[in-house]
Length: 163
Image 1: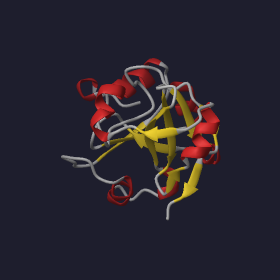
Image 2: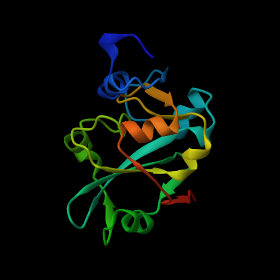
Image 3: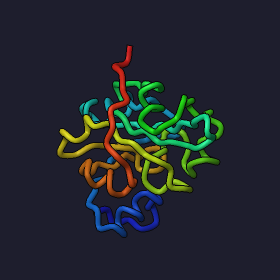
């Protein structure tokens, strides 16, 4: 587990309190950059790196989806998965207010509120996966089952290939 207390994010503090092991990957970053570029900078395989997207349903409830960076969220599949008629991505300007994180630093662990969360079932095949660490310039590598537990998520299929 990472030891540097003063640089801990909310996500890291939660993982530590749950005694969940993780490894930090850091990179220089002043503003949002695409997850594929981050994977390239850190020499990480795309299939191990996952992004976190936040949506809102017709009911006005928020939903969190964690998916591979080379895939896109299928809003129809995702809506069906969470029992909504439809879902829409939240606006970038609302990310901080809703999640407590900023664009590029959003992670499913430790948001302001516990939103219904789904992790793409492709992660089940991995020994370790990499997600945002809760701030720009930081990624966390951990076991998929540990992310599932820490984010109170469920496995689901809701992706389409990017293209």
